[in-house]
Image (cartoon, rainbow, N blue to C red):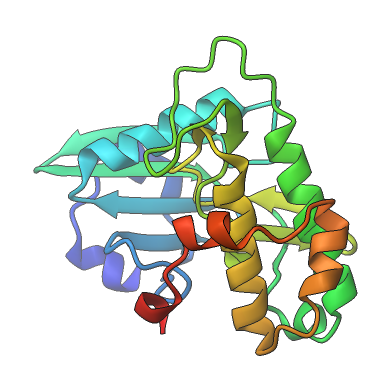
Length: 215
């Protein structure tokens, strides 16, 4: 199990992953959590931010049968850490070369993902996005790495801990910024806006995106 031998793993979780190939994922996340890929079956997150990981589990449980998200397998709190084992969402990152070289397709997949998220029935929803106010279900961190694709379709949505009721423009703004950043140009932004079915709102964009801080 390589590096995992140096880590404490609760017995309940160890029972699921023993004898399986495990590798640490160091790219694509900035939470400070330890994130491991367990073959092509599970993702294991280990975090000292217990409350945030608990929130992610509750949101994934809420979104089951509503969105293609991870399903919870086991959750344990021991030694001042949370251990969350969940199923691996299938699909390829939109940061893969074949998507970055096809901005029309990438824009279409992003638009499909956002429309799926924003169309969730919010009746009885008790989750709120902490960065915005509104009554639409939002992702809250709608960047390219958080949407997985299978061919031309949405394969999965990941990093759901910011999901909840909020302003749809928090998703539009982060999507636009991430699309431009990863494409390395604003040339294709009109295509994205068309796919999203919106017009650019500079005031709303700047409400959620500070480009100077992101440089």
